[in-house]
Length: 353
Image (cartoon, rainbow, N blue to C red):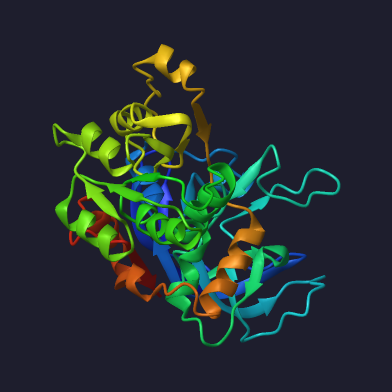
């Protein structure tokens, strides 16, 4: 075993291809993981189309000019590098955190508190491959009854909306919540908002199939943002008070402006979807009068992934409906195209090496 298949993005040309590359060798404190499942995320599409670039690329990515994509990864421990201190063993089932701290600062504990959080499959090689490297502190054991595909999507697809809802948005029971985009992140946000007691939950998506899915996942209402009576519908659904917390999981500038316009007093707009578009507040006086807020959000903390693994294992969160299809790693480009064009309106496509 000296080579493997990997989905590589060449950064200068923004060309993506599944290529044969050397199997990586784990260094000190690292583990080689045999990948069993890897999620396909919209941010992977944005990397390929050029609207997203590595934030802090490691030297290996800079020198190679290419990165293996994939930040939602689950598999089994294959080989331990030197100086691994944890109680890891070959064959152990694991999920990988979507990123790691750069490790430059003394006493580094939390990735998102770091000024240089490194993202797997963005700043360093990820899991669209037969094997991938992970620092041992980025591994989390998963129980035998949690399937690899469901475990793989917890980092990001589930943990990002979870962190946005319980952390950045600080949603409390009986608060009115709006969720824009019922795709990979938003569909999970609907279920998680219901879990924490939000009411009503209003899903917003231009696709009829996405609105139907949001209702099936627990939304109380599902509105078309293009409908001329959209704002009136939100006001009516919230008994005239507007939204307490609005989440943008689609990364669409117009959606953000629309959400800001239907916030209630002290309402918050949480930007969880990534886009280079500016944030526009049309009625800035009203926004100030209502003491509204705009909060940025990115990713999640390691403990969020651990909590969600526990919730899924305890039967509190069934992620089976989130797996739209399994796609062989060799056909990763097809999976990217399906997500980009919303063919079949997928929640999560999962690559299987």
